[in-house]
Image (cartoon, rainbow, N blue to C red; front, top):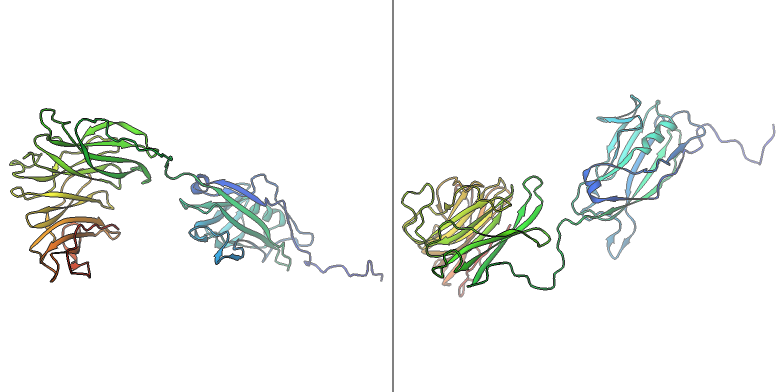
Length: 441
């Protein structure tokens, strides 16, 4: 025999598959990868050859995320909320499809999905029906998706193929760049802008709330409310409640409008909250002795009223009296949005504070409930909805903790007022007075 170039010919299956034409970098818009898988091999240039393997039985396609070295204690090229936001998959097309855990090509199962691409790792185990040409068509259909609304701009993945005969293509490296989209328009503004268009008299006690898209739940704008003197009844100087809706970029949506139907005497101290399903609710203190729908005798003293609106400022439902009791003074309403689209309210009454819940249109879900169980005098309440559907209320209470004139207390209830967490002293320092509490989830 004769030896050529001093080396024996390689044994069957010893030659590695050659993966070529893989794009080293790709760029996607955030909106595109949020919508679903985007093809990585956009120009169709990928190719796979294997000189000595008739099929890829037992071979694998493996796509994995790469973490570069650590610099300053921080891993580089990882997504902001971890690799879990990344997803690699196989797009339908080119004769390929995925059916459950089966990878099909022209209707024939050529492999099974071992890792489904969640977190950026995709693994396909091939069978005897997989050829180099068939595996190439699968690689050409690889796609990338990312469901995060705040994805990191850079990540790196590795693509490699083994042929089942001991050959491996090595890693083809792809850098993926995501062009972020602006989730909220916050145009720089280095000057103050007046909110109210009516300027005689005084406009005070403003409050603001985010408005949410009723379909997507994304922020859609905001609304500002305030009290304005000498506007709803020019014959006197008593204030009424007004509002202006804004787009996310700060431009006005329509004109300012009056919130309160009843204009006699004063409407003050507005509060506003954006609802989960779109729209908003405004609450205020009213001493007009008004007679809202469903309350034949009307409010016999100062009460707290509310009105629901859609995102365009059109009223949804009637003005409602938030408090049940009508013979005593009720003031200082606070509101919170509920996960089911409704809202919760709390306010100060005679020596106590109260709570109540409502549907989105202002329909009460039950009667008011008293919050303190041990207070001799309570005021200045606030409320927030918790993730489990309960409500956390806080308030200032006089002569209840031993040393102070006032202390801050917490109670958690369900929407009917049924106790989840009993009345609890929040402050640990009890000397002096603790008041004006606020709560936020």
